[in-house]
Length: 209
Ligand SMILES: N[C@@H](CCC(=O)N[C@@H](CS)C(=O)NCC(=O)O)C(=O)O
Image 1 (cartoon, rainbow, N blue to C red):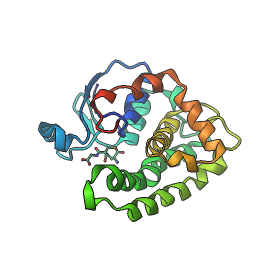
Image 2 (image 1 turned 45 degrees about the vertical axis):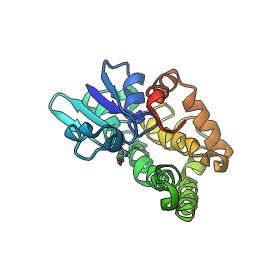
Image 3 (image 1 turned 30 degrees about the horizontal axis):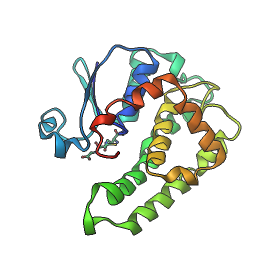
């Protein structure tokens, strides 16, 4: 397995997942955004985005989808929820909620506060999408208030998928607006050795110090 990764980007989801599961993998770390700072990366992934993941003939570009692939393909029931479990639908919902609902608005904040320069920065758009992101945490606020992890009473790749979104929000300074239970949940996830190890990788190539 090989993964292309940038520090604090969505590629942290599959990187963290592979580390939790103890897989052997090859890792390529890139400066962010690679389409600007490492143009030959477009020859690997024409989208220019990270993650890019390769497993034999399989190539993938969706961070939560790669986590789902890893547990299904390598039958890691210990990090997943089985289809016959009553919380299977919930598990899949958190898996896909993580990027489509939670990470997407944050990318607007990142772009218009950090990536664009000068008068291309848009404070109003950034604030509107920050508020949108915080409002989209409502479902998590209610769900995590009396749980340690999202599903089936154990740590799964759904926690990795959602936990990364919360971590990205923290790096954007949006965690001041998290509820106490979400702050505590994020701290629990960030205390995991596999998170600590993988979250540090590539920091030296990050433009965001
Ligand atoms: N939905 C995809 C999105 C991938 C994506 O847009 N990644 C961002 C980093 S978090 C990226 O590579 N941006 C650089 C660019 O768009 O040039 C996923 O979940 O992996």
